[in-house]
Length: 217
Image (cartoon, rainbow, N blue to C red; front, side, top):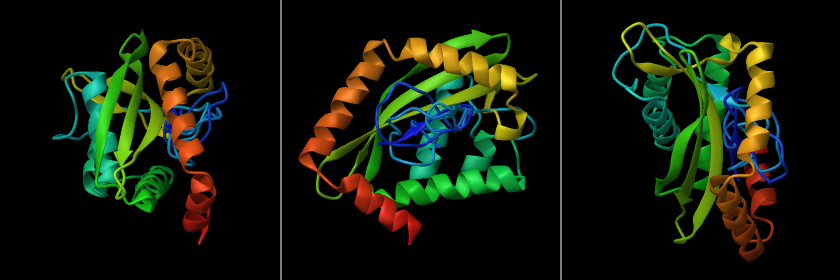
């Protein structure tokens, strides 16, 4: 499963920690928790974030909107749109690596499309908003692969939200996000995700291992 966190986030199993950006599970894009909705790359217990700089098009009037756009851009393999969600036209090396890894991760599932299940703000602090999103990757065999990601977003002067880049996420932000994510794990959206993920893995033993092999080859 994918678990990303806005401090960066994507990953696989449910544990009780957070996300990163990869991934779920989610950047900010990375803080580790056991279920990484979609394994790997959205970094559990970490958290993915949005930061405003320049950019247009894919930014959202709400933090939830830009997070949804980012996930859809990743799944559709649209690198340019992914950068726009981060509010930049050209990504630095760290962000470029994050984007490429996320796109590669989702592509490994060979999804027909992505279905958003739930998306909302975990907490707000000034112009920053920490957002979670649960979603299903609709696979070729008709099954749904449950994912979860978290992202930190930031509102710019024009009132639009962008995902905060990993390099813009401070240690204090990561610490607060980790604490808030721990609280979030007691909510229905998280519990529903865990149940769905466990159901999928029981029906498909070895799926995560095969996925990991595919990603490492």
